[in-house]
Length: 210
Image (cartoon, rainbow, N blue to C red):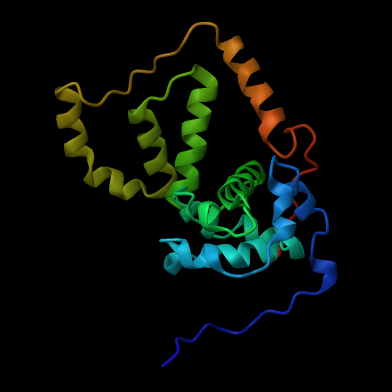
């Protein structure tokens, strides 16, 4: 018996964002999303598509339709394992993995990613640590991850954490590199080259429409 999928929601044109597809398409290779023929090869090749709320094929269609809120707040982009199977097998050579990354960055900037879902929180805390100090401290990143997603689970892992600290395998000591200004200049230049729009150019992620 087919599983109940819930009621379908009708989207009116006024609820869609006509600029959304253009923002995603502005990344290098992103304009290829308009060549998608909706064959579904990406969804068939994706090892994690059974666990996604929308398949990769649906994500492409939703971006082109302007469904900003649904795309940026869904779990699909965060479950992407970056295995590039979809990109390798796509008959139109669409770089879907890169498109997933662009959507994730927009979701983080707009703070519209799934609340308390560990993957986006981990990505944001890791990036903030590297951006600030040039180093990633696993202990601090893990601590912030637990505090922002599931503090009670952190208590259950406290004994293990103490054992690792006593053996020197786990530390909360923050290290940082010299010449962090150089790092910031490199990151700024990479952002202009690879990202859809700079932070200052974004008009702000619109309100999520569900």
